[in-house]
Image 1 (cartoon, rainbow, N blue to C red):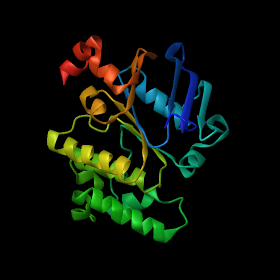
Image 2 (cartoon, helix red, strand yellow):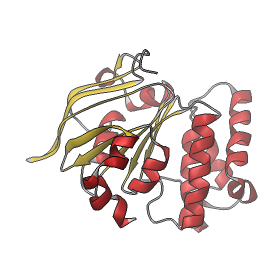
Image 3 (spheres, rainbow, N blue to C red):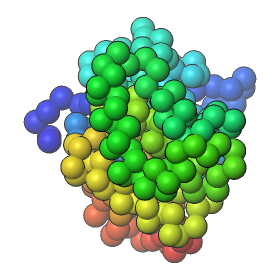
Length: 241
């Protein structure tokens, strides 16, 4: 992995909301096929970073995806190039059925046979969705909606999937379903995943490398075992879960 070119590379990223300096020189790189975790408290800048990558907010610095300068690419083309964002808000179509929401994830794809295969893959990954194909999204539980949001993102055929707080507010049994899905996607499908999480225990369970983001700055970055061995991480983050 170390000999490959980065799948995603962020260099000296700054984001401002008016006079508020939300991200302060963030730099990191993600290799093909890895799970990279970004942990930190609420308000640390995790969502802002993902929004910048997805083209949703203005920024200073550089973001390259497979060598492409994302500042030159529209948010739609970022998705069609394989960089797909599953937001914390989920952004489902509330009055659409499960099946219709999943189909919306594939709206920019032309290979309908591949879409059918991916649809069945999503239903295999999340059997609860298969059982509720005709149910409207707004009538589902929070955990089921999270599964649907991830499934819809997968229907865009990502090479790199960004997940923002996928376990936030979910019951432990649903978190286990999300856990199994992430493992399957990474290990069996080879999907690269950028995982932004307050739940440090969950992130450490999956990520090979992590970054700790606090008040818009990366305070610690490195292999997962460095985080496991850090007294500060253990006391400030692991102990609260």
